[in-house]
Length: 273
Image 1 (spheres, rainbow, N blue to C red):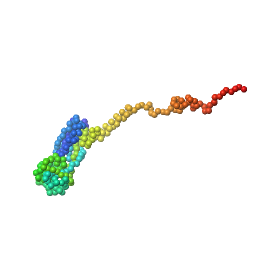
Image 2: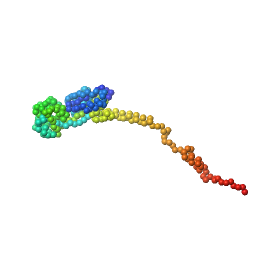
Image 3: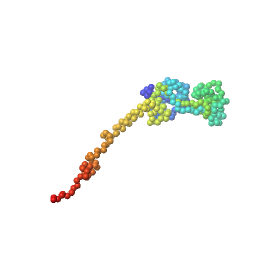
Image 4: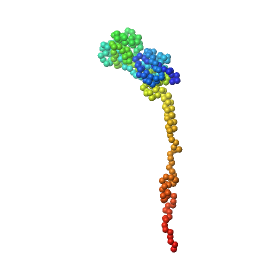
């Protein structure tokens, strides 16, 4: 499905931690007649929301099922550990997984990070969500490792966070159902990729080529209309000896090229004998 079937509004889903305000502002500036509706959704539900058509596109955390969803990676987030402000980790700028070996590291069910092995000691139970895990950190039960944007989302005055140097990183992407790549989706792709308002705004390569071809044809037509009629090419030089120009004037003064060479001289008439 393409542009002709696009909805009159654009619905944009986003997962916790992603802040779409910058792109929404640009959308409203460029397409004021097309309302953009934000659809907040959890990380484990966003793909189903897109497949059902409840959103036209969405900010997701990779990986996603590439069988029916297209995705454009946008950026990679720093991973941090959330700890109480009086925790020993708060005294340094960054830590490694080995530095957390003696800590109880909480592992919420909605964790967006892909671990081969979670550092530290496991808790008896996994928290239902990141918000629950942060509450447990504040209660002194353990620590939790999350993308930096999620740590900021759940910020509390009694907590802080520090970079974990060897933890997996979370990649944020723009995703949409491949079979519903509408013109509105292409417009939003152009915005997140930083295209200017004078660009093709994310249109497909086929559409871009067609538009450029049309512009080229129109330009050629204008050039042809403005070109003066020269009457069949370059001006020809007059043939030698034909009228007009300096040659005629020279011949009229005498000694022209038309008379016999060395003609008779004028003199006095002879006397009779």
